[in-house]
Length: 466
Picture 1 (cartoon, rainbow, N blue to C red):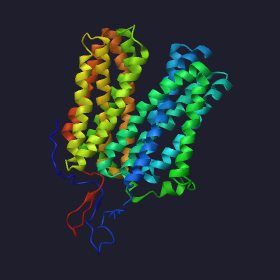
Picture 2: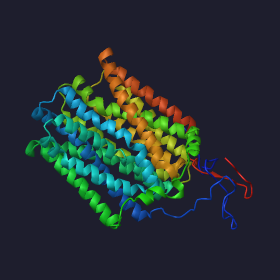
Picture 3: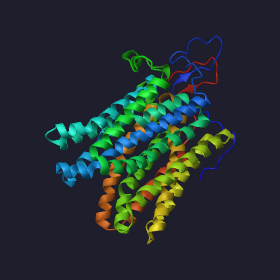
Picture 4: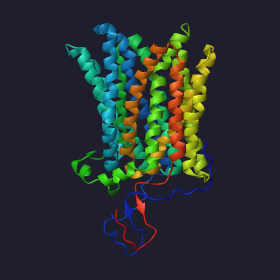
């Protein structure tokens, strides 16, 4: 485990060169860019708290809309006579769409602002969710319309987390990023709980259509309130001019991107996030089946609710702890590594305990500990990308999330193969532990917290050419 060092420095060589500030310096040296202006665009603490609550609610609604289809899938399959394979095709189409807009969403957010991309995407996927029952009833082949609708939902929701990363890197100071990202991240668990409880109730009382109508219209209402009260109802959200002339910090050439990906710290966050996402998707997909197979008489609401109830305060705790340590002067890189150690190292210990014979209460305790500790990555690798490249954090997080989504889908399928081949859940939990340890070792060995998206020269009048 990384040793936390106090008053560590996060400086080092970077990528886009500029000279140190000097009163007479108007332009950079030959082959270099002019120094980027250091405007203080960070939110004040009260403003940051308001945005934190708003983004938490937005992420909660994001998951309410995302999980609406899985909740209603059984009822829809009965009404439209879908087979298990057809139901799986509808549900799985979301993730294929989700993979394709990660990088694009982050890139656009870096140029025009993450809050604008969040607003437009929320209005779009909220409308799509509310319109889903209409599509299902109007189309003569609901299986095709629902598959297309889920694919489009994936495309529209794929920009959410890269936009959050871009917005946080541009507006939140380093010592407060952990709390914001962990709080907003807990919205995913809150949304899953809300739609699981309220959605199931609406499904029983008013039919599956009501779940889509309510979650979709609430999402549209959220985007309207955000536009009206936080963005003050400003004019066109995104214009072609703003896309073509984004701020100087978003203009990184292909050469600079190639140099960025050659940085060991950048490769480390990509690999670590890939491992984290893969294991999380696997647990999310297979834990309900594990409990049904191992404890057939157990109540479903117990193992579907308790782990997520634990995950919410755990996520908040990780953010408060990481920000407190950084504000006390501890080295940022060491704090990020400590959070990731809890997320991937300590959580794996509880995952391994599931391999042996255990009772239902102990299994619930182990799974709850695993899911709770996993949320510490919100203050680890998820924030580290903003430390490394705040000027292009959205696009870089999009790359990370794309890799994580693809690898997650593959690992979920491979886990199913292992269960059928071995007939044992121990093989799946061992696989999860192995992938976690691989990502953790990579992060501990290569992770840093210095900026690598700019290059600063400590010599005033030396020409530097890349």
